[in-house]
Length: 71
Image (tube, rainbow, N blue to C red; front, side, top):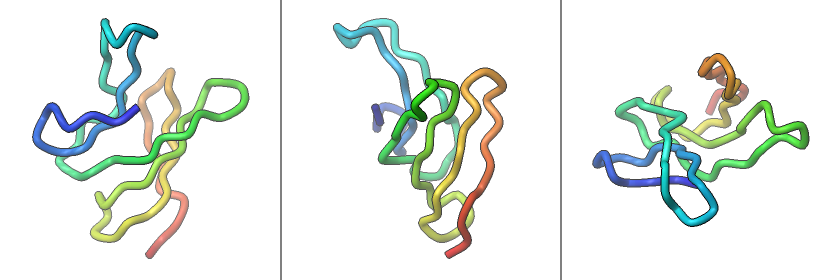
């Protein structure tokens, strides 16, 4: 899910009841519209961290985000 708790949009995971939230992204950019990969290891999302809205991939285990599109 996405959360605006830090004053910008971040991707977070939470227990089914909404408790125990953990931020997966922590940039000053707006990270939105998360979609999980079928195997649950990656989250695709949109972000304006490069100056434009682009698609990014996040490896959940390592926390590494990779930009997939440009503009």
